[in-house]
Image (cartoon, rainbow, N blue to C red; front, side, top):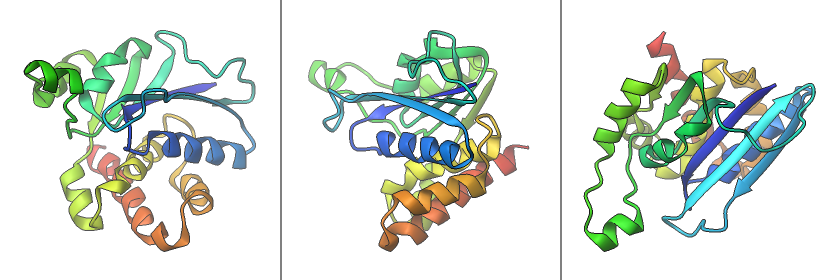
Amino acid sequence: MKSCLLCGVGGQGTVLASRIMASAAMEKGLFARTAETIGMAQRGGSVVSHVRIGEYVPSPLIPAKGADVILGFEPGEVLRNLNFLKEDGTVIVCPDEVVPITASLSGSAYDGKAILDHLRSVVSRLVVLDTAEIIAACGSSRVVNVALLGALAESGVMGIDREEMHHALKKKIKPALLAVNEKALNMGAETIGREK
């Protein structure tokens, strides 16, 4: 069984990404369970999705130290959920920070770069997507969730390859938006290719 925790803030496409991943697993003949915490999913609120796939999945919720990978849509959200990651787990993250409303209201400092530096020191495998390049090439920030899925597929951590993810993507994305999302999927995968 493989487990992936997706974490971000409302409006980043976290839940859609979890559904694409689960669909890809089911198309492969695996069992998939998902659970989301989206009660505070208004823009800026934390969103967490659990995805577990395998021949047998007893529960949709990932226990502490049970995630093979964290797919992070925002650095601070990864840090907030780091207790879910296995000792030798992988983190794939977007470097773009979304300042929490609590920091905005209190005037507190929020430094995404410092959070990434900390993650580099405590995570055995950290992959940081070049979201600026992906957004520039695709012309939209709304495809970053799919770029993360591309990186995840190419990493091999969840046992779902790029073609399987692409097949699920075609079922979940409107035809008018498919081409740009396919480009994002491939660019995310290329991030892992450059890392190897």
